[in-house]
Image (cartoon, rainbow, N blue to C red; front, top):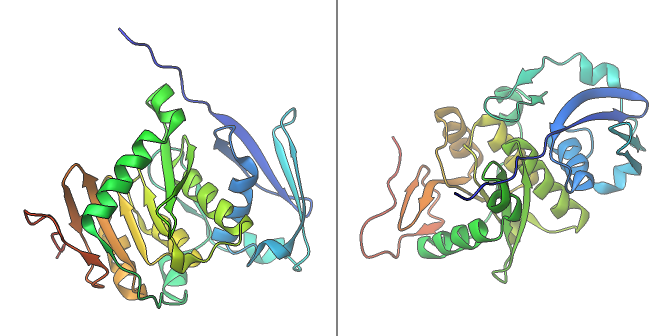
Length: 253
């Protein structure tokens, strides 16, 4: 019998301008990508130019960040916390009402369903931590030239934050990218993608009703159950071209 290694789980305290935001359970890979992605996803920064320094101390399990944008912890902590569902449970300070105020995605991006399924397969084969442990989530961006970049973590939210952080640090443009994830697309996952500006989001599993409602409002295409030769297209932004022999894209109602 093959035995897989145990997934890594590491408590990290995020300290911004001397204030502890929270302690997060993370996988010890690409932590600098995570901190940029998390701060952007939660509205602490609008770009990497808002960050002066990032200091990671693995001995103490802390990431200390200095921001230059006048970050006010009193404003942040006055907001209601929303605890995220599922594995690697996290916290977001954005409500569904907040997310509805995000800019709507204005993109002419489109792709074939067969292409998404192919990239989902490449994503699965390019996730080393999952292949070793069998217990990791992943997030992937598909670049305009067809290459992919993958980030992994024990938590699906953390994995998405890592890939967004990578995109920010590389100054990639959202209109050139597609986001794929192994995790369920819930409203807070949708909010992360929406804040960055992804027009197309695909998952190997489901999207929640709330996420689909937000996606439709923000003009984002969401595709679920990307497996083999099947998929469910939850939205109707006409960005997905169903080129498979058998009907695979089903619009959720």
